[in-house]
Image (cartoon, rainbow, N blue to C red; front, side, top):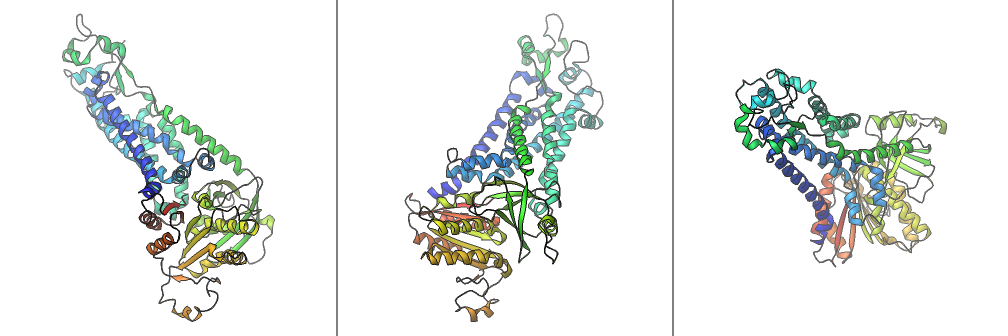
Amino acid sequence: MGNWVENEGLSIFVVLVWLGLNVFLFWWYYLVYDVPPKFFYTRVLLGRALALARAPAACLNFNCMLILLPVCRNLLSFLRGSSACCSTRIRRQLDRNLTFHKMVAWMIALHTAIHTIAHLFNVEWSVQARVEEKGTLAAALSSLGDKPHESYVNFFRQTIGNPVGGLYVAFTYLAGLTGVIITLALILIITSSTKTIRRSYFEVFWYTHHLFVIFFIGLVIHGAGRIVRGQTAESLAEHNPEICYKNFTHWGKEGACPIPQFSGNPPMTWKWVVGPMFLYLCERLVRFWRSQQKVVITKVVIHPFKTIELQMMKKGFRMEVGQYIFVKCPAVSKLEWHPFTLTSAPEEDYFSIHVRIVGDWTEGLFNACGCDKQEFQEAWKLPKIAVDGPFGTASEDVFSYETVMLVGAGIGVTPFASVLKSVWYKYCHDATNLKLKKIYFYWLCRDTHAFEWFADLLQSLEAQMQERNNADFLSYNIYLTGWDETQATHFVVHHEEEKDVITGLKQKTLYGRPNWENEFKTIAERHPGSRIGVFLCGPEGLADTLNKQSISNSEADPRGVHFIFNKENF
């Protein structure tokens, strides 16, 4: 139970608090518009659709306040790096910022749907009441405002029937027009954020996502038209709607109820979002300032498996293990920024990234760096690069544990390259103060060529550990998942050789996929009573598997072994 709380409980607590606040706001504002006499006459015109439109509007304000905060990367990195502000558990929740961002986005979509559908009924009934024959309370209320010194409750002032009247509201009223615009922007943002679009057409996702600017501008001015109107406090003092509505034909006459007066609700959205919008503006200014700082590409290395390594230098650049940066290459695109994990160690005098060529932008970067040419490229011919970051990730906490499991899938090994390099440098100098005592490293790849660019690092670390008589410090397992034992039979004849024929390492390459249950049980037996950090950079399916194994193989006793799951998420 203790590990379940540590792995899942706090995030579930955060989710429950967030859901609870949504439910509370919905119910509270539903009652505000469905019960008090202030909106009695508004309810006569609109019925329950009034409260069903206003309750999700309050939830929209709340969630739109939250949606920008998880993408303020500099703010999160600052909080994450401040041990005074953030404990390990809180930092692990900050690492789930994009997950929370997506959850909030779906909640915005849900409340937008409820709000829009309710307002469609509101518009239809408002238009219908305006053209309704006299003699009904709805018609009397709709006619208020036609004479001097009267205020109106029905925002629709024309006498045009449906459906033309509804279209007139949608495209000529400020609330209607901004509602259409922000709903279309939201639909485009969400549909282009699906995994298929994001992975196959990243540019579409990137450009469409910036419609959030239009969304927020429209959101702030959406309520400026004040179309939701209620009876004023002064009018309520002399005109009780629950009594006076019965004699609406005598309003304003001597001895009868005075004509009720109404006013529109002031716009409230800006009060919710102005703080996050200011923080995000500061975030973008910091990013812009960083992007103007000079970055020099010192070396370009072409690795197998369509992977290139960029080694760079930038004045004042400081990093920690496992962090990531955003990179822009104006020669490829003047606007697009793409995230890459740093593969260098803090101890090195440069910082590097490994880029796998998988799309238009990476292909453009490959060509811009001259990697498509056979001849040697002069440094001055290399493209200009803008760098934003570095930003913190879960891998920063590797050195907080005595025992860790590092799991990388394919190019997902990059954050652990930084970790292992840093370990190597620490052992080269002085490892006496190093809390980390044992690393279990797993790398899963489909193709043999993928191992080549990373093998040199493992060989260096392997040799360093042996020289220090600490060969047991690093246990690594490399799995070739695209092959099985049948396909690998022709390597069996080399199995007895000192080094693996694929990687050149002492540890033999394994075929197929790991039996994670056995791996976790074995490690638990070797390290009783330990808190073991599990770090993954890989797909969601593998994340679910490792998270479940972390929970199921942890003991209920606080003094027992506990696996703490962490996932790279950017």
